Length: 141
Image (cartoon, rainbow, N blue to C red; front, top):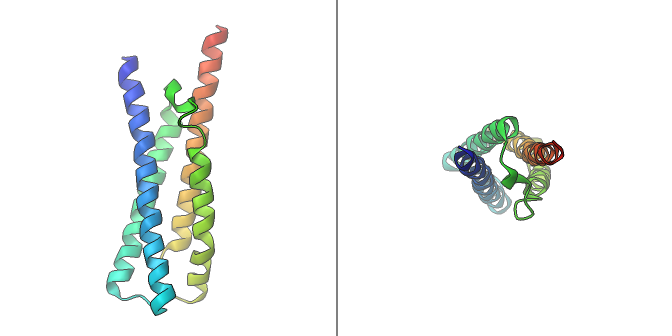
């Protein structure tokens, strides 16, 4: 039974990272398009919406992981710090998103995506800390 938890928690962790990387790549594509052409067509708005939904999915999976994390693998040295990477990625996305919202581009959703990514990173850090605390209390008892 312990082996299935280990695989499940690690799989959810990698799913959050994959969703976050895909959404950052999509947002980077949208912001580069805006930098070169100063506007988005319908396809660009569709990509922005897909990026928002992928980031929302990463937030949902990270929430499940933070609430149910039991695996000691989450507090290992190889997985430590990826939550901070997502937090910093969300903060890096926030600045172009705020600039895009000032330019009155309808329906971009970049600010919400940056907030979702930052929250996903914070939830990964919480899952790592909860797994570390469970591991420490099991060593004491």
